[in-house]
Length: 191
Length: 209
Image (cartoon, rainbow over all chains, first blue to last red; front, side, top):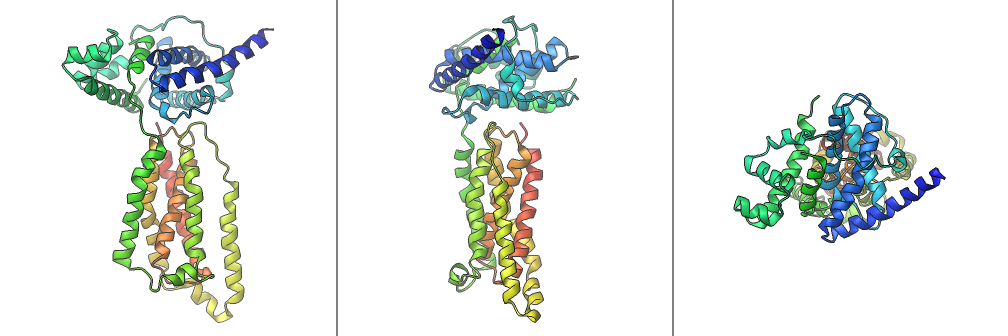
């Protein structure tokens, strides 16, 4: 009975994620947010199950690292393939990589993701994961821009007004900053 | 920054990156032109060229690597997607065809001539030129794969090397006048394998993300 429910959830997950990601590609930001919010608890479960010995904050850093990777590689998803296996493949690669950087070798079959039920929908336990540290490595304006959108919840237009930049310039700087953050994590992570 | 905050940042970033295929289009053509122009202007094309292109015993030295490149390039590009799996077992057909050509040449070449054909006069230029002429294409393939999400970097790099090796070799064949399969199967083959290994090693380093 419980197994059946699990199966049904997994089945729904595959369909839902694809639908959300398709809508996101068509420009629906809300759908994209829902997609990332749906992926996060599954990631969190896998990372915690594997990361025995890592603190909650470290686990959440890995989750954020994977989310950033999924975001920056979203153009490698083809709309005719289901989104969940694609997501798991990226997540598996990044989780293994993240643990390797932290000096651990883990074996992580991709099936773990499919079988993992999402962690309880609790909030992020960490007030201040280390993405904050990485922000200080960006040029000040870029860091300000990312904080305005992330912490103050400003839109692209509002951020542009606040920083006296055009919307197009804000978009480009945001995209570049995210790429830079991913590259910085790749280089600077140490525990 | 909390994870929810990060998600709201990601949500606002709507600029998509180009796919590996689109990037490849931009880089591969100039890369091939570079190698071709080098052969044309520095080495010189073989004259008459139709000797290479139309003589049955000679033609494989151009067409075999060309077919290799045409078939393997899409396989390499496909590995830019994280879920991609490619089957590589059938690629053994290329060494098999090479072996058949070698056997044929061995049987049809007179005893005293075999060693001379095998050694030719340009082993070193060939072994240097094939990798050199393949490098621009290998660079183009690796640059485009970097835009993807490669989960098997060594395999993707090796296939990129194999494809690029095919391209470089086909270009070199337009210059080279060593026409015995005893020569070209052996030394071209070694050159292509070298590029494949270089591709695998480079792939492991540069295709990480």
